[in-house]
Each structure stands twice: as structure tokens, then as C-alpha cells.
Length: 611
Image (cartoon, rainbow, N blue to C red; front, side, top):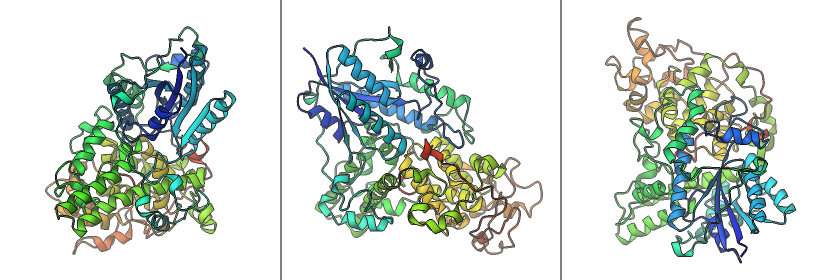
């Protein structure tokens, strides 16, 4: 009997719980079999180290590409995120098997794999009734959707794209028309969406049970015909072996700043993110952060807003963002946990105003994440251009803010930023933490982005591509949207949005414990707590023998505005590299950028990530 198959193409929704794509495909009328499918996209993840993959591409006359960023030619998915992604895929496969199903895992291009699967099932006498997938916002992902729509239309196979599976607020529930009526300022968006009250967030779907699942359709081997072969991950491939193969080209050609390519991100001493990828780990983190059972009065969530600007430890923030990036948990699940925690605290008589505000702020950050997603839908490729969104939201300012130093004119200052050797310990600590662990605090992201664009005055997209390579929680809309925001070319553009890194260090690391962790060169006895942030002030007056021989004796750029935050008695005129930037652009600005970055097939920073 012919099978009637539904294919659920999973991308950034690697979970079983609260997954509307899996549920819709499973419950479609007449479906007898369900194929959950994931494709490691060769344009996003470098697959050259996977045994046999490149050979299969050549036999099939496919174009062989490297998964590198457009401007800087960094690996688009660095070793940290590649590891997290692989862990998430293998965990999903295990979850589906426990329900009596499985996950088809392939390598190549999603649109090509899907079409060839449809043909091959048809050749076996089966019918593919439709493809189900969630909507994405960035141009390359949207291109996959469009290519599938055209090709499947010609094959008379339906394509179902859910526009609200990725966000906290479903697109269909927004109180305005998207994209034309999306406010250009977040606060206006937030107030209108929060006005939906209990209708703002849809309920979480019930967890599936084994008896409800449709059988997994096994496909016959077609390896005898190279022109129709699609590269499936071998059944005997272990997670550790696959991660090792993914790592081969990434370690052989490390991105600047990656000084310890042999150490997994979750095994680095002092990491703030010691967690594995996958839905299982995501559920454990949710249970822990919201207190599991009991009243929840001691759980980390009730102090989130107060601690979220921390720098050390696993619990100063939620650490949900990498799991949200790959959809190992949904934003709706987090919101439901917030509501449940409030209910438990209320029933126990423990719901204080402070606890309520802290819990609310978790939802607030989820709304910022939604907003970046919708902004990307509204402005498309403009988000990835040198002038960001200015040509749309503030054209008169666009020309004035495009004169950054470009990649082709890079110098030692940029290399110092990559390597965490700018001579500014707070900036360097953040950059080293990112390179070693794939994670950086929200506070750190804002500061290093501001320093690159407002002090060193380099093209903000260089930083965005660097983050794209290293971050565990990289998401194109959030990262590019936030880099543009800090650089002053995003929505709500303000050129004066500049961070004084010394003031920030004084506010958020007053004792220098964070920089001591990641910049051991400033942990010497000659430096007291806050002096670890300004070691050049001490070393410059103590002779050439003072300080660390392996760390810069002065910053590559020292802004005159920092002086007011130096300790009393140490506010002498700034020197050693001072450019008197004071919100300006310094010297040696390269020629005006005209590239397009990711927007014409390249791709971030702070807010809404690092939760």
C-alpha cells in the first residue's frame, strides 16, 4: 500500500515539545507517515571534514562551497556553535526515537535534499503530501523557502510555512499589519503588543506521547545513481565522531582570536555556559532556572533583572539564548514558565513586587528578540548593508555614518580587538571569553561593539561577522540588528550611543574579578582591584620592568572621556595612544564602505542575546 508522507523540515526548531511544525505535519489529514528532517546546510556549516561528503558533491556535479562570511571570510559556524548544533541534532534524534519515530539527517542544501526526497519517494510508489516548515526572517533562509515554493508548486506538492513558530508572539496575533505597520521604535512595538494582555502569547502545545506518533518512512538506498544521491548521515555515526569531523577544517584554519582550538567550549575553566546543546539540556535548564517544583522562591528567575548584567558564573542570566537560537526550547515555553512561577509564588504568599518585575523582564527580553525578527522581515537585506537601516528610517543621517574603516584597510588595532589584546582589560576579557567559550554577557557585547565602532571606528559588520563565527547563540536578525543598533545605524538610530568602557568596568566589575579571570596578565600584586582595568596608569610610572611582558603596556586607543573615571590621584592627562575621540571617529578612517555584506548573499551583538 502506498504511503502518504508528510515531511517536517526542521531548521531552527530542534525540539519535540511545543513544536507546531511537527504537530501540524503529524496531524494533517490522510497522512500515514511522518518524516522529521534536518539538513546541515553546507552554506552555513563547513562540511569539508565529513568523510565522503565532498566526493559525493563532485559525483553529483554539485557546486562545492565553503561556509564562510562574505566580508572577512570567517567560518560562518565556528567550532563552538558547530558542536552545540551537532549535540542538538543528535539529542532530537534520540527524543524522536523514544516516541517511535526518527530524524532523517542529511548534509547539503535543504531545498535540494527535500526535492530529491520527494522524487525518490515517488519512484517507490509513495506520495509526499506536503512539506511543513517554520518561517525565518533573514534573506538566505527566506530564499530556501522561495525556492521550495516554486519547485514544489511545479510538482503539485504543497508547502506549509508557519509564520509564528519562531517567535513569542505569533505573527497572526500582532495588533498591526506586518511588515508595513511595524513601529520603528521598540517601545512603541512593546506597548502595542503588551496591550493584547492574555492574548499576547498562545498556549504551549501538550507534550506528545509515543502512541500518537506516525511511523517514520524508510527510504531505499539510491547510492547507485550519483546524480540523484543525497548524503545521509550514516546510522553508525556517533555524536563525538561527527563533531570531530566537523572540527577538522575549523581547527586547521582558525578564525583570528581562536587561540585554543582544541578545547570544547563547555570544558573551559570559568565558562559561564557549561551546558550541552539539545532539548534535553534545555529542559534541565528551564527546570533549574524556574525552580522546578516547590514555591520557586529561591530560583534564579526571581532575581533576573537584578543580576542580568553580571559577568561571572552560570546564573547571572538565564543562558536560554543558545537554546532559543536552535529552537531547543520555545519562547512560549519560557513565558509559560514565567506565568507558572508567578502562580506558585502567589499561592505561597511570596510574590513580591521585586520578584514580579524580575520575572517580567525575562518576557521583556523575549519581546526584544521578537522585535529584531520582525524588523528583519520589514527591512530585509538593508539590515546587512554598511548604513544598516538608516536609508529607511533616517536617510539624512545615512551618509554621515558610513565612513568606517573597511576590512581591506584593516590594521593592527583590529587584530588586537580580535585577539583580546587592545590593552583595555575589560574589552579584552570579553573577547577572550567569547573566543574560548562561544559566550559573552549582554553587557560585554554592548561594550566590545561600541569600542570597535565608536573608538576604533571599524565597519560594524566586521564585528557582526566575528560574532557570527564564535557565538553559540548567533541569530542573524538579533545579532545584526543589535550590532547596527550599537553602531547607530539600526532602528532608533543615535550616533551618541557610545559606551565608556572604563565607566562600564567600574560599574560592573569594580573589583576586577572578571578581568582577572580572563586576562591573567593583570592579576599581578602591583595592581589593586580596579587598577586591573587601567594597568597602564600604574605601569607607566613604574618603569619598563613593571607589568606583564606579554600584554600591551598601553591601549591601542585611550579616550579622553575615560579620565573622569580613573581613581582619585590618578587622573593625569590621558596618553599612550589617546586620540581624543570623545564620541568622534579618530584618525585614519578608511574609505567609505560600499559593500553589501550578508544582505547579498553575508550576515551580532547585544540586547536580546546572552539571556
